[in-house]
Length: 176
Image (tube, rainbow, N blue to C red):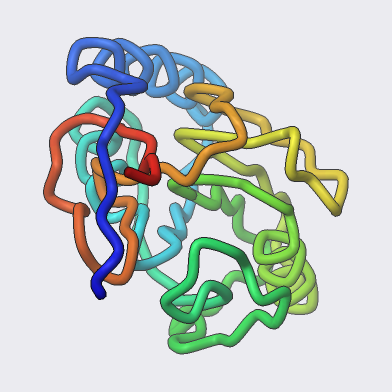
């Protein structure tokens, strides 16, 4: 029998838009004298990064990496796979990682280790959401939209088994 879920609204379109606006203001200020490389973490960050860059007034470049650690589950396997690595030189560049969620910290730690070996000038992290109650690795998030409860969240790019990404708001996936 297929498992059923209920969706419980956590963040509305209005709340998300306000958070993106605030993050953009801080990023515009911090990078006003630089041309940062924004690295979106696929697939979840694509909606967030699209909205974010439309609010940025600075010069910037964009690239993407794709990482996987969930393997069609609601729990991270702890094993991070690089599905798509970086295809641009970041040596002596200011790098801003753009994430949809930082959960255990395992995935972002793997990405930071990967990027640091490429000798950027700086690396900062921007995440729409953070689940600090699940953190296994200590992570400094420079730009954060929301802290969320220890629930599996979907919508606004976040998925469960590739579903729910298209929802315009953020929901928790609740067992029926």
